Image 1 (cartoon, rainbow, N blue to C red):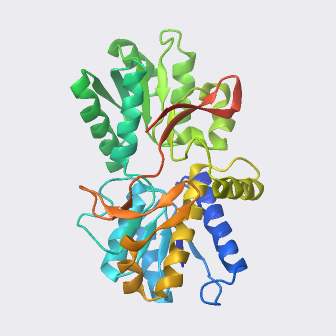
Image 2 (image 1 turned 90 degrees about the horizontal axis):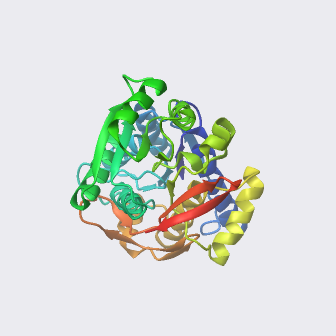
Length: 351
């Protein structure tokens, strides 16, 4: 099995390490129970470094090595490149964590996805904002199909309720200048649709320290505050920044057991990305047991998947507007780090 993971910058390396930990734990458990038809399952890992061209080259290499299927990836723009190349080469790809709705330009039978589509998760986030009384939203952005898609989703969800979204281009602003813009906007919430840790962390620090912006909600729907590095870099300023994560309020016995094992491996609390990695291998191992290593048979098996994952029962279906086989849906939460206990997450809204 080929595994595509961002392990070096500019990739989000902590997310990559969590994803890889989940993949490796599940492979270890599969092999501990006899592997696949008596043969060990091997994970062949390639670092994408958040680079679509590098990821495409890795797909070519892994296909040439004879992998039965591809797994992983976190960054949406990279997963799009992987999905396109996998579709061209006829290699099954189970995407673990990327959420962009248009993972492929055309419908394909070769690709399936565990993470909820961006429209599903970000609509849930917009509902949270409305319920919390925020209808005038500012978003600070950088050029990216992912950020542009997110902005459009938020605008479309908020507009029918009288809400508005003002875009602030971070390519022409410093954090201090951004604060000046916010003072004039009249927005009650600022969403970080920018890279991490730069410029996301300096923006948070600037807004938190600006006496003209008391009570300004800072949000990060892409999930930056989920990881320990966010806390290490931003400290108390990084608390109370609501973000999306894909976990249920209560883990099942399987989820709790896996969570304990992942915590031991990672030396800290596992993110939802680690659970996505584990579930990816769980699904593929089940398909490999029933279909063998034939790529066409694996891809043809997506609609028949029915597997207990760490976060619920996983089945794939065709969702309107999404060209891949989709788990509809993984649980979605809006959570934040508690100001009184930075290691504790408070669930604010569930979708």
